[in-house]
Amino acid sequence: MRGLMMDRPLLISGLIEYAGEYHGDTELVSRTVEGPIHRYTYAEANRRSKQLANAMTRLGIGMSDRVATLAWNTYRHFELYFGISGIGAVMHTLNPRLFPDQLRYMVNHAEDRIVCVDLTFVPLAEKMAALWPTVKHYIVLTDREHMPQTSLPNALCYEELLAAEKPEFTWPSFDENTASSLCYTSGTTGNPKGSLYSHRSTVLHSMAACTANAIGFSVEDCILPIVPMFHVNAWGVPYSAAFAGAKLVFPGPKLDGASVCELMEAEGVTFGLGVPTVWLGCLQYLEQTGKRLGTVKRVLCGGSAVPLAMIATFQERYGIEFLQGWGMTEMSPLGTVSRPKRKHAALAPSARHAIRAKQGLPIFGVECKVVGFDGKIAPHDGVTRGELHVRGPWVIDSYYKDEAATKAAFDADGWFKTGDVVVIDPDGYVQIVDRSKDVIKSGGEWISSIDVENAVMAHPDVAEAAVIGLPHPKWDERPLLIVVAKQGRSPTSGAMIDFLKDKLAKWQLPDDVVFVPEIPHGGTGKILKTRLREMFKEHRLPTA
Ligand code: ADP
Image (tube, rainbow, N blue to C red; front, side, top):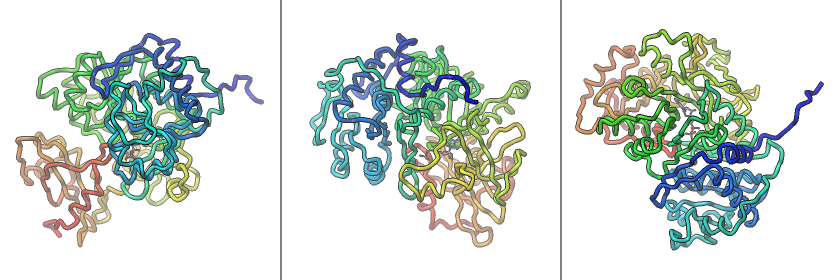
């Protein structure tokens, strides 16, 4: 027997329509690419998204056409999120930090018809244009006054396009499984792989993100997504903020500690979201200036492992609740969020920080299983390791037009293989031990590079650290520790190893330590271990 309930499609246009109608005077504030602060409301954002929808339609964009963006977090990019997807077209966010060859591949693979470009990225688009034959128009995200001289073919001015259109537009209704947006993962080897989200997956992900056990945005919040809108849709924040009717603040191109902290202070931000590097920058700024973040109640950090020392500093020195999230582009991205449970309330602060340092509890909708290296499902005992496989309504079921990648990424039961090696403890918290390709295989034992990195990051002289495995004649692989020292400090190898001695088992201690001025990062801010392995492939361990 079927339930007698309305079958109303979950559509992205519904989010902006809701925010415009019921949170119409709630502010969206942007630090613009041109410089000044821009402010307006959800009501105006909805109106301008509709003008954009009219403009896109006039340019011949319809259902399923791909429109790319090369843009920072600003109100114009926010409008693109709704104006493009709202008409049934597919918004393809390009990560400008990727290599030109990856950008060439992605635009051609997606067959983008239009590219919308921020002023900062006009020179990049000009270099790429000849390699992007499917692109018919470039829309520069600025007004007439700031419109640059450009060699881009068919360059249009965003504000002029909008000004020519009426704000009346009825968002079309269609199947909620229609594609809405496209993000490619920056594979460190091979071509980027496309995750093609749907309206249904996006709206469900926003609803789940707004539950109290997950991110938990509400009408009381003022949110600053420092995570870029070109990386997994800024973790879905533009959608979930509209869902919650929360004030939104966009940082534009300025992502350094000082700029981010000043913006949080000025706008009364209650909730910030970013990768560990961003929060490290903020902590350094606060340390140098002696300032505090008076209005911030929570931060969410994810994208790579979070050092325990950072959690303790936020919680204890600044009184800010620190949440860690884990996810992947292929998961829209949210999978787990780390919050201590009610029964943990009586624990000592350090024990509660240790819970926050785990990647967290799966949120409802994301099913997790750990497949051990014997192929058996691992128990939730906190020690048995295996690869994490997931499924759920906002997890991809295949890569966009990529059979080979799809074939490699799913198990026989159709679960997505994350490539993360994890344990799950008896309370259900997932803890990432390593990426399966980064774990160090030493004499039949596994050394988690994340464990060693976390331990060494607590040293007061260490700014950043990475651990890679180097070949070893006896043990197969042994760890090399690569350290960037804090400015003005010059720690020694011996000091590093001594510091780790009571934190790691003897066989987990690095065989050697090298100091470098900087560690290479990829397009999404993660440490490029492939590059480090390449850089140190000739390095001889003293034990070898
Ligand atoms: P990309 O694939 O483009 O690098 P993703 O954001 O999709 O970007 O990367 C997902 C991976 O990032 C995860 O599989 C995991 O290895 C890592 N990751 C994400 N969040 C965390 C976290 N909180 N702790 C440790 N690793 C994380």
